Amino acid sequence: MLPPSDSPVSNLAEQPLVIGSHTLRSRLIVGTGKYETFAQMQLALDLSGADCLTVAVRRERLYDGQGQNILDFLDLQRYTLLPNTAGCYNADDAVRVARMGREILRSLENAGADWVKLECLGDPKTLLPDPIETLRATERLVADGFQVLVYTSDDPVLARKLKAAGATAVMPAGSPIGSGQGVLNANNIRIILEYLKADDPTYPVIIDAGVGTASDVAEAMELGVDGVLLNTAIAHARDPLLMARAMRAACDAGRWAHLAGRIPRRLYAQASSPEEGVISLRPYPST
Image (cartoon, rainbow, N blue to C red; front, side, top):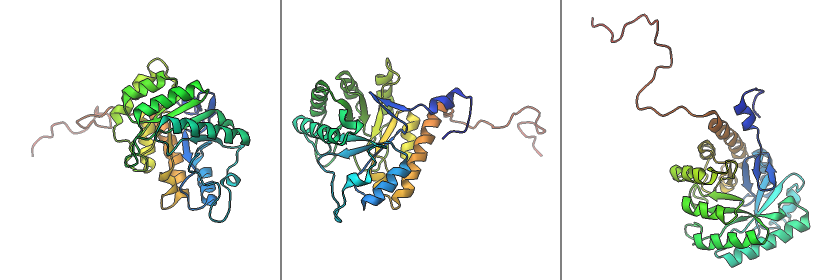
Protein backbone atom coordinates (compact mmCIF):
# COMPACT_ATOMS: atom_id res chain seq x y z
CA MET A 1 0.00 0.00 0.00
CA LEU A 2 1.42 3.35 -0.98
CA PRO A 3 1.54 6.21 1.56
CA PRO A 4 -1.18 8.86 1.15
CA SER A 5 -0.30 11.21 -1.65
CA ASP A 6 -1.94 13.60 -4.08
CA SER A 7 0.56 12.57 -6.74
CA PRO A 8 -1.04 11.44 -10.02
CA VAL A 9 1.57 8.66 -10.09
CA SER A 10 0.38 7.34 -6.73
CA ASN A 11 -3.15 7.26 -8.01
CA LEU A 12 -2.05 5.26 -11.07
CA ALA A 13 -0.14 2.83 -8.86
CA GLU A 14 -3.30 1.97 -6.99
CA GLN A 15 -5.26 1.12 -10.13
CA PRO A 16 -6.30 -2.54 -10.37
CA LEU A 17 -5.29 -4.88 -13.18
CA VAL A 18 -8.14 -5.32 -15.64
CA ILE A 19 -8.05 -8.42 -17.87
CA GLY A 20 -11.13 -8.62 -20.03
CA SER A 21 -14.11 -8.72 -17.68
CA HIS A 22 -11.94 -9.54 -14.64
CA THR A 23 -10.51 -6.97 -12.25
CA LEU A 24 -7.64 -7.98 -9.98
CA ARG A 25 -6.26 -6.07 -7.01
CA SER A 26 -2.84 -7.71 -7.23
CA ARG A 27 -0.65 -7.70 -10.34
CA LEU A 28 0.93 -10.96 -9.25
CA ILE A 29 -0.71 -14.17 -10.50
CA VAL A 30 0.63 -17.32 -8.85
CA GLY A 31 0.39 -21.05 -9.44
CA THR A 32 -0.66 -23.75 -7.03
CA GLY A 33 1.72 -26.57 -7.98
CA LYS A 34 4.97 -27.99 -6.58
CA TYR A 35 4.45 -27.14 -2.89
CA GLU A 36 5.49 -29.70 -0.30
CA THR A 37 2.05 -29.62 1.28
CA PHE A 38 -1.30 -27.97 0.65
CA ALA A 39 -0.95 -26.17 3.98
CA GLN A 40 2.34 -24.62 2.85
CA MET A 41 0.72 -23.65 -0.45
CA GLN A 42 -2.16 -22.00 1.37
CA LEU A 43 0.16 -19.82 3.48
CA ALA A 44 2.34 -18.87 0.51
CA LEU A 45 -0.66 -17.84 -1.57
CA ASP A 46 -1.89 -15.67 1.27
CA LEU A 47 1.49 -13.98 1.73
CA SER A 48 1.87 -13.34 -2.00
CA GLY A 49 -1.15 -11.05 -1.93
CA ALA A 50 -2.44 -12.55 -5.17
CA ASP A 51 -6.16 -12.77 -5.78
CA CYS A 52 -5.87 -14.84 -8.96
CA LEU A 53 -4.45 -18.37 -8.95
CA THR A 54 -3.68 -20.50 -11.96
CA VAL A 55 -4.45 -24.20 -11.76
CA ALA A 56 -3.26 -26.89 -14.21
CA VAL A 57 -6.40 -28.78 -15.15
CA ARG A 58 -4.55 -31.89 -16.35
CA ARG A 59 -1.85 -32.00 -13.71
CA GLU A 60 -3.30 -30.66 -10.50
CA ARG A 61 -3.48 -33.34 -7.85
CA LEU A 62 -6.84 -33.08 -6.19
CA TYR A 63 -5.64 -35.20 -3.29
CA ASP A 64 -2.19 -35.31 -1.66
CA GLY A 65 -0.51 -38.27 0.08
CA GLN A 66 -2.62 -37.70 3.19
CA GLY A 67 -5.85 -37.75 1.22
CA GLN A 68 -6.36 -33.99 1.49
CA ASN A 69 -8.15 -32.19 -1.33
CA ILE A 70 -6.54 -29.03 -2.76
CA LEU A 71 -9.95 -27.38 -2.95
CA ASP A 72 -10.20 -27.54 0.83
CA PHE A 73 -7.19 -25.17 0.95
CA LEU A 74 -8.40 -22.63 -1.62
CA ASP A 75 -10.94 -20.01 -0.61
CA LEU A 76 -13.03 -19.86 -3.76
CA GLN A 77 -14.76 -16.73 -2.54
CA ARG A 78 -11.40 -14.96 -2.19
CA TYR A 79 -9.51 -16.28 -5.23
CA THR A 80 -10.41 -16.23 -8.90
CA LEU A 81 -9.06 -19.41 -10.45
CA LEU A 82 -7.41 -19.26 -13.86
CA PRO A 83 -7.44 -22.78 -15.34
CA ASN A 84 -4.50 -23.50 -17.62
CA THR A 85 -3.76 -26.06 -20.31
CA ALA A 86 -0.28 -27.00 -19.06
CA GLY A 87 1.03 -30.18 -20.65
CA CYS A 88 -0.81 -29.75 -23.97
CA TYR A 89 1.19 -30.01 -27.20
CA ASN A 90 -1.45 -29.26 -29.84
CA ALA A 91 -4.56 -27.18 -30.33
CA ASP A 92 -6.98 -30.09 -30.08
CA ASP A 93 -5.72 -31.09 -26.61
CA ALA A 94 -5.60 -27.48 -25.43
CA VAL A 95 -9.19 -26.81 -26.45
CA ARG A 96 -10.37 -30.04 -24.83
CA VAL A 97 -8.60 -29.26 -21.54
CA ALA A 98 -9.86 -25.66 -21.58
CA ARG A 99 -13.43 -26.87 -21.88
CA MET A 100 -12.84 -29.35 -19.07
CA GLY A 101 -11.56 -26.54 -16.85
CA ARG A 102 -14.59 -24.42 -17.67
CA GLU A 103 -16.95 -27.17 -16.59
CA ILE A 104 -15.04 -27.78 -13.35
CA LEU A 105 -15.09 -24.10 -12.38
CA ARG A 106 -18.72 -23.75 -13.32
CA SER A 107 -19.52 -26.60 -10.94
CA LEU A 108 -17.57 -24.73 -8.24
CA GLU A 109 -19.35 -21.45 -9.13
CA ASN A 110 -15.98 -19.74 -9.41
CA ALA A 111 -15.68 -16.54 -11.44
CA GLY A 112 -12.78 -17.93 -13.47
CA ALA A 113 -14.94 -20.32 -15.47
CA ASP A 114 -15.02 -18.02 -18.50
CA TRP A 115 -11.28 -17.65 -19.04
CA VAL A 116 -8.25 -19.83 -19.65
CA LYS A 117 -4.49 -19.55 -19.65
CA LEU A 118 -3.53 -21.18 -22.92
CA GLU A 119 -0.32 -23.21 -23.05
CA CYS A 120 0.40 -25.13 -26.25
CA LEU A 121 3.96 -26.39 -25.99
CA GLY A 122 6.39 -27.15 -28.78
CA ASP A 123 8.67 -29.73 -27.15
CA PRO A 124 9.32 -31.19 -23.70
CA LYS A 125 12.95 -30.05 -23.47
CA THR A 126 12.46 -26.29 -23.74
CA LEU A 127 8.72 -26.09 -22.95
CA LEU A 128 8.63 -23.20 -25.39
CA PRO A 129 5.26 -22.68 -27.08
CA ASP A 130 4.42 -24.04 -30.52
CA PRO A 131 3.52 -20.80 -32.33
CA ILE A 132 1.28 -22.36 -34.98
CA GLU A 133 -0.71 -24.55 -32.58
CA THR A 134 -0.92 -21.68 -30.10
CA LEU A 135 -2.43 -19.37 -32.70
CA ARG A 136 -4.87 -22.06 -33.85
CA ALA A 137 -5.97 -22.80 -30.30
CA THR A 138 -6.41 -19.10 -29.58
CA GLU A 139 -8.72 -18.66 -32.56
CA ARG A 140 -10.81 -21.71 -31.59
CA LEU A 141 -11.10 -20.77 -27.92
CA VAL A 142 -12.06 -17.18 -28.70
CA ALA A 143 -14.74 -18.50 -31.06
CA ASP A 144 -15.93 -20.74 -28.23
CA GLY A 145 -16.47 -17.75 -25.95
CA PHE A 146 -13.35 -17.97 -23.79
CA GLN A 147 -11.33 -15.03 -22.59
CA VAL A 148 -7.90 -16.33 -23.57
CA LEU A 149 -4.67 -15.39 -21.82
CA VAL A 150 -1.96 -16.73 -24.09
CA TYR A 151 1.46 -18.00 -23.03
CA THR A 152 3.83 -17.24 -25.88
CA SER A 153 7.47 -16.62 -26.70
CA ASP A 154 8.92 -13.11 -26.68
CA ASP A 155 8.37 -12.82 -30.45
CA PRO A 156 6.75 -9.41 -31.12
CA VAL A 157 5.28 -10.49 -34.47
CA LEU A 158 3.53 -13.51 -32.98
CA ALA A 159 2.34 -11.43 -30.04
CA ARG A 160 0.67 -9.05 -32.47
CA LYS A 161 -1.00 -11.94 -34.33
CA LEU A 162 -2.33 -13.38 -31.06
CA LYS A 163 -3.87 -10.07 -30.10
CA ALA A 164 -5.41 -9.79 -33.56
CA ALA A 165 -6.84 -13.30 -33.10
CA GLY A 166 -8.78 -12.06 -30.10
CA ALA A 167 -6.55 -12.94 -27.14
CA THR A 168 -7.66 -11.12 -24.01
CA ALA A 169 -4.04 -10.89 -22.82
CA VAL A 170 -0.68 -11.85 -24.25
CA MET A 171 1.83 -13.39 -21.84
CA PRO A 172 5.37 -13.58 -23.21
CA ALA A 173 7.89 -15.79 -21.43
CA GLY A 174 10.72 -14.01 -19.69
CA SER A 175 12.75 -17.20 -20.23
CA PRO A 176 11.93 -20.95 -20.40
CA ILE A 177 9.45 -22.29 -17.84
CA GLY A 178 11.06 -23.15 -14.52
CA SER A 179 14.51 -21.97 -15.67
CA GLY A 180 14.75 -19.11 -13.19
CA GLN A 181 16.71 -17.02 -15.70
CA GLY A 182 14.51 -13.95 -15.45
CA VAL A 183 13.82 -11.70 -18.45
CA LEU A 184 16.43 -12.64 -21.07
CA ASN A 185 15.37 -10.32 -23.87
CA ALA A 186 14.13 -7.07 -22.43
CA ASN A 187 14.23 -5.39 -25.83
CA ASN A 188 11.71 -7.84 -27.28
CA ILE A 189 9.43 -7.25 -24.30
CA ARG A 190 9.69 -3.52 -24.93
CA ILE A 191 8.75 -4.04 -28.59
CA ILE A 192 5.79 -6.23 -27.62
CA LEU A 193 4.60 -3.51 -25.24
CA GLU A 194 4.97 -0.91 -27.98
CA TYR A 195 3.11 -3.00 -30.57
CA LEU A 196 0.24 -4.19 -28.39
CA LYS A 197 -0.37 -0.96 -26.52
CA ALA A 198 0.09 1.49 -29.42
CA ASP A 199 -3.63 1.94 -30.01
CA ASP A 200 -4.80 0.28 -26.79
CA PRO A 201 -2.73 1.45 -23.77
CA THR A 202 -4.63 -0.71 -21.29
CA TYR A 203 -4.21 -3.98 -23.22
CA PRO A 204 -2.74 -6.48 -20.71
CA VAL A 205 0.79 -7.78 -21.31
CA ILE A 206 1.91 -10.16 -18.56
CA ILE A 207 5.27 -11.85 -18.11
CA ASP A 208 4.74 -15.60 -17.75
CA ALA A 209 7.58 -18.01 -16.92
CA GLY A 210 11.27 -17.75 -16.16
CA VAL A 211 11.11 -15.83 -12.89
CA GLY A 212 13.77 -16.95 -10.42
CA THR A 213 13.66 -14.39 -7.67
CA ALA A 214 12.16 -11.09 -6.61
CA SER A 215 14.48 -8.88 -8.67
CA ASP A 216 13.21 -10.63 -11.83
CA VAL A 217 9.67 -9.55 -10.96
CA ALA A 218 10.78 -5.98 -10.24
CA GLU A 219 12.69 -5.82 -13.55
CA ALA A 220 9.70 -7.10 -15.51
CA MET A 221 7.37 -4.59 -13.88
CA GLU A 222 9.85 -1.76 -14.46
CA LEU A 223 9.72 -2.57 -18.18
CA GLY A 224 6.04 -1.63 -18.04
CA VAL A 225 4.26 -4.98 -18.17
CA ASP A 226 0.91 -5.15 -16.43
CA GLY A 227 1.61 -8.18 -14.25
CA VAL A 228 3.75 -11.25 -13.65
CA LEU A 229 2.68 -14.89 -13.44
CA LEU A 230 4.92 -17.33 -11.56
CA ASN A 231 4.91 -20.56 -9.56
CA THR A 232 8.20 -22.42 -9.15
CA ALA A 233 10.16 -19.42 -7.89
CA ILE A 234 7.99 -19.42 -4.76
CA ALA A 235 7.15 -23.12 -4.38
CA HIS A 236 10.77 -24.29 -4.74
CA ALA A 237 12.46 -21.48 -2.84
CA ARG A 238 14.36 -22.53 0.29
CA ASP A 239 11.74 -20.62 2.26
CA PRO A 240 8.58 -20.40 0.11
CA LEU A 241 6.73 -18.21 2.60
CA LEU A 242 9.47 -15.60 2.76
CA MET A 243 9.85 -15.66 -1.02
CA ALA A 244 6.10 -15.12 -1.42
CA ARG A 245 6.41 -11.94 0.61
CA ALA A 246 9.45 -10.88 -1.43
CA MET A 247 7.57 -11.40 -4.72
CA ARG A 248 4.68 -9.30 -3.49
CA ALA A 249 6.99 -6.44 -2.49
CA ALA A 250 8.95 -6.69 -5.75
CA CYS A 251 5.80 -6.52 -7.84
CA ASP A 252 4.72 -3.35 -6.07
CA ALA A 253 8.22 -1.83 -6.20
CA GLY A 254 8.60 -2.52 -9.92
CA ARG A 255 5.20 -1.06 -10.70
CA TRP A 256 5.87 2.07 -8.69
CA ALA A 257 9.33 2.51 -10.23
CA HIS A 258 7.91 2.18 -13.74
CA LEU A 259 5.29 4.82 -13.08
CA ALA A 260 7.76 7.11 -11.31
CA GLY A 261 10.22 6.89 -14.22
CA ARG A 262 13.90 6.02 -13.96
CA ILE A 263 16.61 8.59 -14.71
CA PRO A 264 18.41 8.18 -18.03
CA ARG A 265 21.60 6.13 -18.08
CA ARG A 266 24.69 8.29 -18.66
CA LEU A 267 28.23 7.35 -19.56
CA TYR A 268 29.81 9.86 -17.18
CA ALA A 269 29.16 10.98 -13.63
CA GLN A 270 26.87 13.84 -12.76
CA ALA A 271 27.31 15.58 -9.41
CA SER A 272 24.42 15.15 -7.01
CA SER A 273 25.04 18.49 -5.25
CA PRO A 274 24.79 21.96 -6.83
CA GLU A 275 28.11 23.16 -8.22
CA GLU A 276 27.56 26.84 -7.49
CA GLY A 277 29.22 28.44 -4.49
CA VAL A 278 31.88 25.81 -3.91
CA ILE A 279 35.02 26.92 -2.08
CA SER A 280 37.54 25.21 -4.31
CA LEU A 281 38.08 26.08 -7.94
CA ARG A 282 38.17 23.39 -10.61
CA PRO A 283 40.51 22.15 -11.80
CA TYR A 284 42.27 22.24 -8.45
CA PRO A 285 45.43 24.40 -8.42
CA SER A 286 48.72 22.56 -8.28
CA THR A 287 50.74 22.81 -5.07
